[in-house]
Structure formats: C-alpha cells, structure tokens
Image 1 (spheres, rainbow, N blue to C red):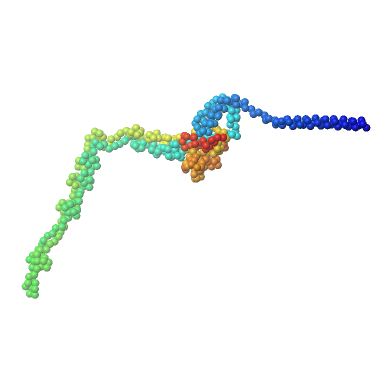
Image 2 (image 1 turned 90 degrees about the vertical axis):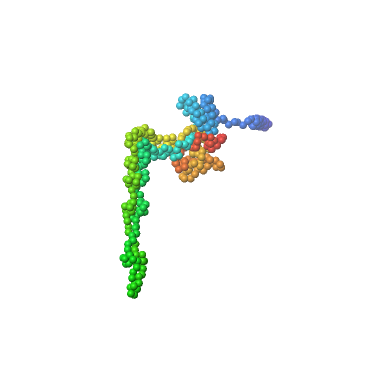
Length: 402
C-alpha cells in the first residue's frame, strides 16, 4: 500500500514538472515578437538602370508638357525617341513609363488664320478664278491682247472730237425770235368804211336830213382788218437755220469727221493700240494662267493652308492620364467662339475664357457657323488654340500637381 502511494506521488511530481516546463515555455514565447507576415516578392526595377538617361528625358518631357510648352515638349520627345535604338527596346521603355491603361493622346490644334470657314480666301470656295470668273480672258483687254485708246492728237479743236456744230450742237436750227416761233405775224390794214363810203357820216332823221356819225366806223370813215403774214425771217418755218453750220448740224471745221487729217500719231485711224500691260499681249487671264480654276486652291474651293479643315494640326503628343483633368474631351482656348447644336459653349467658370466639350458632343462642335467635323476617339483629348500660345492648358487640361 505504501508502495502504491509512493508511486502515485512520484507520478504527480512528474506531471507538475512537465506542466511547469510547459508554462515557462509558453511565457517565454509570449515575450517573443509576433511572427512577421511573409514579404511580397520584390518589384523588379532593374530596367531603371537600363534607361537612366531616357527616364531623365521623360521627366523633363512631363514637366514641360504640363507647363503648356508644347513645342518644347515635342522637341524633347523627339530626342527621347531617337536615343532608343531598337523597336523592342522602345516598346520595353514605353511599357514601363506609360502603360496602356494610363496612355492618353493629346491632339494640339490651332485655328487657321487664313480662313474662317475652310473656303479658299481668294475664290470664296467657288473654285474658279475670281478675276475672270472662269472666262480665262484678260479682264483689261478682254482677251484681245492690246489696249485701244482714242488718239487725242488729231481731235478737231473746234468740236473737240464730237463732230457737232459747236453753236447748235447738231440741232441745225434755232426758234425764230422775230415771230416767237409762230411762223407768222399779224398786220392791221385800214380800208374805207363801206357804209359811209369813207365819209364817217350817214344821213338820218325823219326826213333824212340829219347827218350822224357812222355806226360802223364810229365816224372815222375807215375800218381795220387783220391778216396773217408769213414771218420774213423764217418764211413761216418757225425756225431759222444755224448760221455757223448753215443748218447741217456738223462742225464746219471737220465736217462732222471729228478729226483733222494727216495725224502721224494714229495714221488717221483715230485709235492708238498698245500691248496690254496686264497680259503682255497674249489675251489670257494672268491670275488663273488660262486654267479657269482658281490658281490658289486649284479649283477645289478649299483653304490652301488648312485644306478646308479650318484647323491646323500642330502636334500629337502622348500623356499620362494622371496628369489630366479630362481624358476624353475637346479643350477650347476661347469658348465664346464656339457652339454646339446652336448653343454657345460654356466657359470654365468665373472669368475664365476657356471651355470644354465632352466626347459625346465633339462631333457637333462648330466655330461660329462652320462645323469643325471633329471625331472623338477613346483616350484622346483635342486642344484648340486661337493662337500659337498654349500656356492656357496649365490648370485647365493639365493638373497643377498630381
């Protein structure tokens, strides 16, 4: 019995020793730092060593572009591209600095200063020569090749080349002043009175023994009669011939020929012919070179500068979408000049003059009444400047910081 009790006590001591050791181990483990999570695999940035100089150019390009210095940025980009020798290396570089999910394209456009509506400024879009209107003939000589002018050397000095009498101006006659252009005059003639036989008295009274004044002639013994007599100056014609030209109406000096003879200047032709100074004598329109079509636009009617696009494409540059406030839109330097569906484009707010047109309405954008016919493409921003300056893009398209 004592042996059994002793064995049990020994077993309990062993149990407590093992338990104590276990507790001590747990306490020691509690003082250790917690096990750290497994680290992610390190990002391979060895490519940066390969492209050290290119990365510097890329950083320079980024800051220059976002500052709105587009031409300078385009130059830096060209230097960057030329420093990479192979297509594979170039693809590797762009895959790191500008992955597909960040890639945006910015189209920089400038308003054409040679036109307003894309039409040729010379012919107004008609396509034919605006000078001869497609007739091809010289407008100065009408295709004859010479210019004809009246000779002034042999003009009659009296009529100044009209051929008319200088006094009557070809009327040949003048109204008769003597008869007032009536052709006759009225004369009065006295004749003995037929009733009193010129005595002025007639017998009267009951016994016919009283003499009284004649009632017809009033005691004068005469009566007056009026008659028309042809005017002695005009012979009843009411007018008299011009004494200068004898009624011919022609200049008496040149006999109506307008010129005096023997002119050494024109050879009595009355005309001096000289070679046309505009076409040099060939009779062809010099503005269109006898081609009928407008020489400026070759008959297309389109502006020779912008080819009818109304805009000039200045640059197309890549950009990281995180640099941009808009990734699919059209930026306008002066919103007041543009309309969408007949409505003015809103400005950027406050006193800002710039505006933005979202992708959904880009194709309806017009400058004034001229539709620009722009096409919206995913990931593309189109920027229209009114002049060469592009600094307005900083803070509008490009974020000030990102």
